[in-house]
Image 1: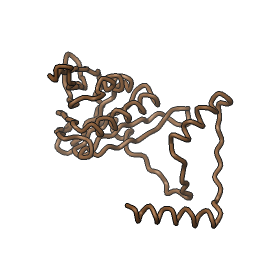
Image 2: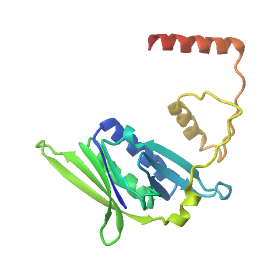
Image 3: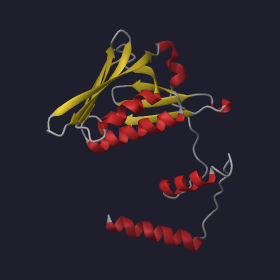
Length: 206
């Protein structure tokens, strides 16, 4: 098995860091699935037992300037790794304003995901900060438990407010109760017409 990848675009690096931070807040450990065209972060705890289940998919061509991998075999060209979510999130905290981020699969007395961050110093020379994140390679026989979940077609679609607005409201209400109930209603015909008109005008501007 081999894996190495590189991010040089600042926006892509920041996006990747935000994804890592989100996962670290959801679960202690996660599974990283590496395939030729995608990276997947997987949480597979049983929701019925209070756990979190998640399938996060990142197209490698949208994030990485370099991406090379070889899976366990030609027929099963994938790699499944288990790692501590906080370790990856903590490593990426040093990547702010980085020139480049490199990730590769290594073996330093134990399997590691090595994260190398190239930073600019005051003298305009670069320095590299390296983090070795311990991982567990998941055997092929367990892959069947880590497949993309089937999601039924939605019966209703809801336009939500801006996420920052929702976050602000929820954070204020968490001090009142441990549970939050939300309800959606059908908009009136006039409001719906105004919304469509607004979308049409924005489309025209674009």
